[in-house]
Length: 458
Ligand SMILES: *Cc1c(COP(=O)(O)O)cnc(C)c1O
Image 1 (cartoon, rainbow, N blue to C red):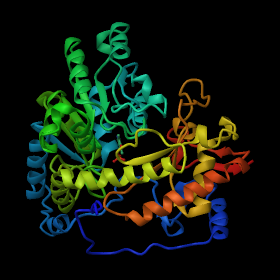
Image 2: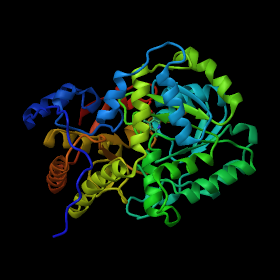
Image 3: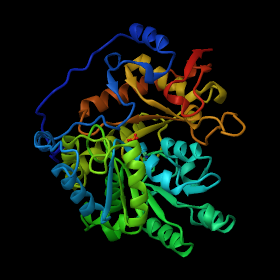
């Protein structure tokens, strides 16, 4: 008999999760104004809101925490982290920040001015927020295949080089401070970018003298996909692949809450000393002194170990294959999911799942609410609510995809949890024709509304 795949770890500490009834959940979600962000976690059975900062640390990371150095300046933990980042990315200059968006805030304060254009592949929401907050524009140059959920393209995070070249050719060079390449591309479904594409984008950027920055939250997962799907890299280690990726760019922002395998943290790493020097000023103003940037010494120590673990093949295989297992099972149940399955999450295609709910009634949000009520599962809408209003016309923007993202925390849930999730989704799918109406917004913030928006049931 063929032996099944087994996770390369065992459990040393457990955390109980609370069951609840459908009736309780109907009441709770109503009290939360139908916004899943408003639910306290004890009202959630399986929490797939995000894979950001929700994973489990290893025994090596916990022991690193005990030896964290809390010195204000020049702490040993800072130096350990700096050395690790340097080893993994090849970038010389390093600034810790309290999380990924803080890294964006600091770096973009140096690089972006009003009226600028920042091309990239489906910018993450905080990235776009930090661009638009500076009255600049994010231009999505992702390949068209990314917007068809059924096409089995191996690298749906790729940039369309013609689209990018067109942006370069039709705008003054000094209006484009940099290109941002998100690896893996969260907003298009956790889809990777190929090394060939990274190389080509880098070459194009160089020929126009425009820097290339990586939004690297899931760079290790991206490296795993390159190893699996790009022949030339099958015998290369994850660490070698990661280093090659970064060699084609000028710097990176990092949310360490993803592939840093920690609960909080982030950083900037750069090739250029001048940009680094300018960034230190903002880092000190917004984050903290340059050798802690809003992080505890112990957290920097745990991050140094986390980055090392996250760039090991065995860990990545267990992580990405768990997500793939959920995706495969849903596919067997005919539940419409974005294909191919991404690295950190399974994305349910709400346009196919509940086409009966009008788009202006937030069909993906309606589906996310239903999954909570039926199974106690907390996913998140990646659709019209998240896409927010156009900053100039204040009209709803309707993205091509309406998705519910089930993000899988790292090293946290078991295969049985995946089986439970798949069964809940099948049951909701089988009764999908009963859903006819969605929700209306009764209150929302002027920017990044999804966190606090309030809904009413129609
Ligand atoms: C999470 C994330 C960010 C922002 O990081 P935070 O740590 O949540 O502030 C930026 N870009 C991408 C691609 C992300 O996934």
